[in-house]
Figure 1 (spheres, one colour):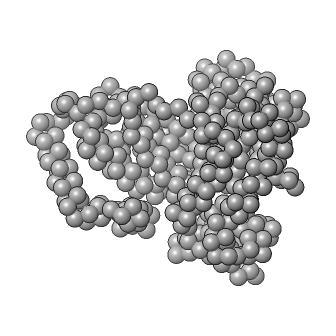
Figure 2 (cartoon, helix red, strand yellow):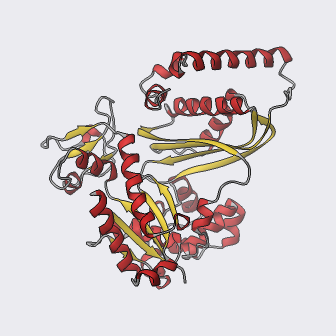
Figure 3 (spheres, one colour):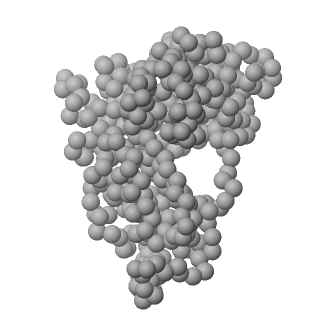
Length: 410
């Protein structure tokens, strides 16, 4: 039987800030947020702030008024550096092929072949890794252990973070007592609020309900995702680290952005537009078109979940307006009014840009004008810098493109 460990860094952003400033995370009322943004939410809070009953995601104006909080803006460069330090700790003990970096503060590790090597039980190995992370980086973490990735992940999410030693180990024999009773369903990895509502409409309110539901109906309604939900509810997950790390068969380009604050349906279009503009420029540079566009949204950790949708196109695209409209159509269809913290767009099934496929509503002159406009924009940006020519929306508070260009030195 295989053994996996899922590890999540505790209060990661806030811990990084405390360590960088030589503050004690357990006595310092530090929060990470955008102090100048009205209605801003905390991105992370120190363990001391959590001990006051404040959740990681809280609106700044809802914070206790009797505490003098230290408010610091997010520094993604610092967090990326610390994340790399932690990843290097894991690489000291495991092959990189057995590690999947799920996010900036979370990893999955297949430790099956290492238990005998290190002469440790899964729990002993998990405790050792947590101590090594703390000893070498100053950060603290929680670990879930399971016979598959899903079980390790939910053991970490639902139990390890509450345990005194920050470790939880789930076996198949724990499914009935520990997994089936979980409600609401959105507490489970992979089930967002929209899917939870859909399942509730089917009379499914607990993981046990899901496990005993007709899997063929779930598959008919939700395809492969429905079958995966049924499998997970029964503790079944045949995925491997290799599956997670596998490169797509077709060439692709993508861009993902973790946002500094929560976005919603009224302002996320700015970020989507800026992301599409970046990808469209890369398509033009490589003289490619995209046959598949994949749009993914992850919600804030306070609510978890999100959605992902791929569109296979009859006519490969390169125009930013067309790609933007496709992404917005997906967004309008699946978004359920939850706070957004990350978006990712991938263009795949790339093919050579060898000519224009005119629609009934396009003319050759219109296509030529668009191409000439893009060539002019690219020329100006390459000569005078990326921030030399921007959309008017880039000047809005919700835009991130100017700051990102500055950080990237372009």
